[in-house]
Image (tube, rainbow, N blue to C red; front, side):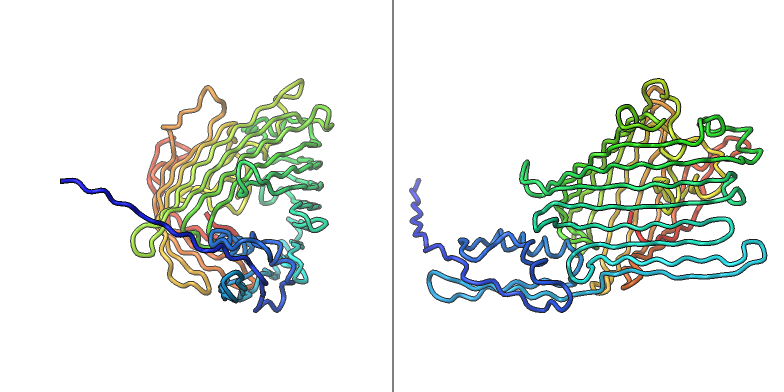
Length: 433
C-alpha cells in the first residue's frame, strides 16, 4: 500500500548574458538606466535579477512602462532588450492674484526630477506677497562620481507677518545631505545623513497667543539657532512608486541638535514609520501605515525646543502637521494649540485603480492618531479616529492632486471641551497619504 517516487532532475546549461540593449529612452541617458540594473554582460542569466532590475527602473519614476525581453542566441548566450516608455517627470506651478489688503500675491515653482536626463533633481519655489514671502532652492545628485552615493544641498528663506499666523516670523537656513545605498542587511536598505543649520526669530505676537503661550512660544529665547545632524535609515521594497501593490517602506529617523554642533537649541528627536502594501481580490490593494515619534530637550536648554519641532496632527499634510483626515490642521491658522512630545498614528486603506496612465485610484480609509505632552501622559488608546473616502490623480507637470471626504469622530469643542463628530473635505496637493 506504499510506493516510492523518484524524481530525476537533469540540469540544463546555465546561459550567460551576451549584450543588454536599452531602447525607448529619448531623454534619460543610457548610463542612468544601466546603473540601476542588477545584471551585466557576462553574468549568468538570472530571472530574479532581471525582475529586480525592472522594479528598480520603475521606482525611478521616470518611466510609465518597462518591458524586458530575452532573446536566445545559442545554447550558451542570450541578449536582453529593455524597452522603456518615458513620461513627464517635472512639476511646475504658477499663480498670481491681487487684493486691496495684500496687493500682489502669487507663487512660482519648478521641480525637475530628471535634470537633463542625468537623474539629478533641481527644485525651486518662490511665494510672494505682503503677508508671506518664501524662497527655497535645492539640488540633489543621486550618483556622485558614478557610485551609489547621494549628495544634496538646499537653502531657504521665509518671512511672514502676524496677519495670518499671529506673529512675525523670519527663518533662514540650509542643509547638506549625504546618503549611500547599502548591501546589508539586504540591498533594499539605504542610509542618509543631513546636517542643517537655521535661524528663526518670532516676534510681535497677537494677544491670544501671548495669553495662551502654547509650549512657551512667547517666552522662548528668540532668535533660535538650530544646528543638528539627522540620520535616516530606510528600507524600500515597494514594487511601484505611484500605485504600489506589494512591498513595504520602513523609515527610522534620529535627529540630534546642539552640544558640540553649536546653536542655542538642544534636543533629540526620533520618528519611526512603516508602510506596507498587499494585494487583495481583483485589483484591490490593502495599505497599512503606522508611525510614532518622540522629542525631548537636554542640557541647560532642555525646555527651549523650537515650537514647530513639536508634533502636531490634523488636516491634509500641507503644513508641518502630521496629516489626520477629519480634523483641522492646527498649524493652518493662528497657533493657539500646543504641540506634543509624543505622537502615534495608524492608518489603513483599501485602494483600487481607476486608470493606469495617468495614474488614478480611489480609496476608502480608517485612521486614528494623537499627540501627547509627555511620555507619562501617553495613552495609545486615546486616539482621534476618522473614516472616509478619497481619490488620487497624478498629473504631468502638476504632480499629485487628491480629494478626501472624512468623518472625524473626536473633534473637540474649544469652548465646552465636548467631543463631536463632523465631516470635513480635504484637498491634497503634491503628496500622498
